[in-house]
Length: 235
Image 1 (cartoon, rainbow, N blue to C red):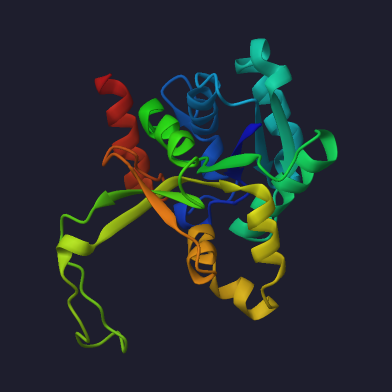
Image 2 (cartoon, rainbow, N blue to C red):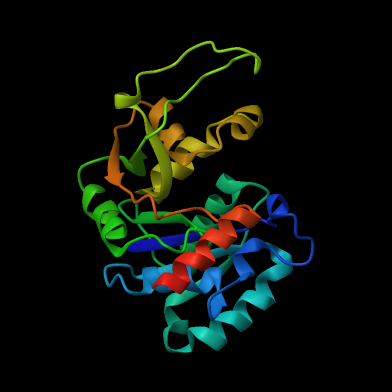
């Protein structure tokens, strides 16, 4: 089985809004979250879509799905989000294992709810590459020079750009592997290791690269939202 895990557990504090998480803001004629879910609905290989939502916003999310996605309601499940990204993934996987007859070979395609411009090609490439790698990370080549500063005051290193990529989502892996690796971490490591693919990497697993798009932006700030709205208007 192939599952999609949409990470919508955040409250959007960096957006500077107090009344509504960013994934529920309007983008064109519907909320950002709905745009994102629609992309995964179009991928027939995906059996179920599980959305990890902050507990305070579960009923609101259910109402949105009924309003915008009623023909696909049987394919969509809601799980409570966690205190951080990986906790939300854990809750989504726990929901899947509770409600469906999952096995060790089942994979999950995790994706930020606020990346509504992900392409179907990228999602399908994640699925295809999962046959050959332990995990998949979606990336784009770094077009700017990356400067490292360990003291935040002066340059400590400038890595060669040809070897550098910018991480996006989706990230794809077997659910059983993620749970084993994550549960083995100390509480301190769980706070530090916020990226799922890094958890696979430090466990010696082979993480493949799926080609992302520069248009696959993450809507995190007011400026991002303005850019996203202009992208919708141009389509």
